Length: 557
Ligand code: C2E
Ligand code: CA
Ligand code: CA
Image (tube, rainbow, N blue to C red; front, side, top):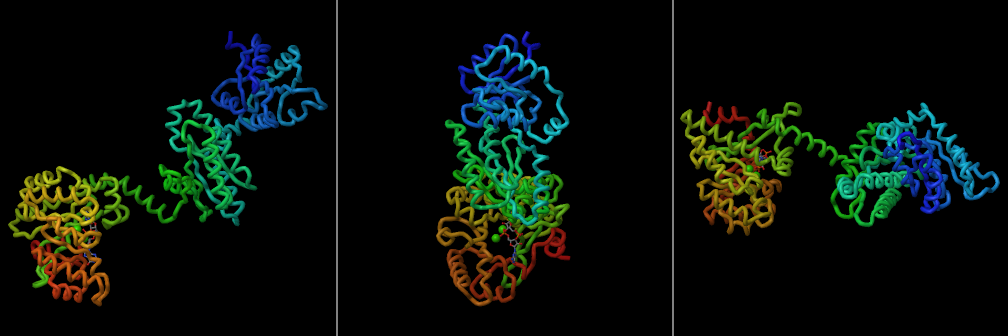
């Protein structure tokens, strides 16, 4: 019965010879066949139990010796290898024995001799040694490379030993590897990984010192002395190696590099930085190598922290609404306020919107935050009206993503109805940049909002490109001019000349103008002189918490 028979693996690239040997053995043994060294390693590493290996010809010079070395230096060193030598030259088997072979036979094969020697080899089948166990704990089973822990530990040791060398830490992975596995099967996937390991070994092994290993799945790492030109060559070699493995599937690497400018950094952190570098070229055509950039890295980490805590922040009402009043220049009286959000973060304190709004705009969370602010403002207006206060309007910001929502007008109408807010008290600011990037869509949104009865302000006017042209197309009620026009210093420069004509034009069109970012008395005077009636800015008041706004401007205490 098969289970009780010992297993011999015949490794031989010539099918005829393999068959002949198999014939001799199959009466007594269970026989596995491998046509190449890689095939043999793959079968063994995938769990084939082998009691001895019979190694024939592997076609190219030295391949047999290479295979012997591989077995000898792997976790499978306890499998005895018997070598078949082509002819009986002097000291025929010495080289093989030198490379760890257990025994040899020569051609022509004498059946009896072969069986005898194999028997002895199989009986010898050793108990795993301490070295073997140690080896297994440090190596990746499939490829024989260092595993993550060992690779990182060796890297630490290497960097510490060569403090005057500038290293680069590299992270390699194979694009769409999972898909490849799914399409071609796991066995072929494993073969690909073994090939990748050989490529990695090939390119890293030629340095005087370097470390490399398989980190997980299709991720491999190298740490080596940094040499820019050589690095680009290596990437090219990996690319070619992968392309050569599979003709029918585009296999390409992604390589992330961190130049080890801080050698004291934990190797785990170097790995993360290389990973961040690699993201620069993921899914980008013909871009294989990305370097970690310190500033980008910090941003990336901060961004991840923001994304992971945004929902909790919403649930725990960490987003708070500040109010910045607007003023009539003629009499310095406040005429309402703009609601501006802040994040009262439990760890980092009060965070301004420029740190989180761009991130929420990217991941879509901004539409939830928008709604949160609108609802909060509606609740407040409801409360103030309930207290018998006669109010000026509060404006809220509408992000570009909310403008894309075809139900926007319904949502806002629903809110004011729910809280009994007169429509004139909730004004809406839409940013000019949204209009520039998608004029038709915004025009449609503006039309619907107007139809519902809302008053609209065009925010950041002048920050985009087609500003002046836009005035004739877009139907907004108030123009809110971007503060960049005021930043040209005290002397009336170009910005001020443009500002003057924009305000004149708005006045001619019968459109009220609010200037934002007014910080000094000079600016205020200048604006008054050129016909601007309304302002918002630090000169009058900074954005303030609700309680302060209520005290100063609502209840006027
Ligand atoms: P924005 O809508 O243009 O708001 C005006 C910004 O200018 C506010 O910054 C305000 O604090 C600032 N500011 C006011 N007066 C002055 C001044 O005299 N000098 C200077 N240098 N700045 C002044 P903030 O509050 O940091 O908001 C930045 C941006 O974040 C806003 O620009 C807006 O685009 C966005 N944002 C703020 N709150 C919300 C919100 O609730 N929803 C949405 N979608 N976006 C918001
Ligand atoms: Ca605004
Ligand atoms: Ca603005």
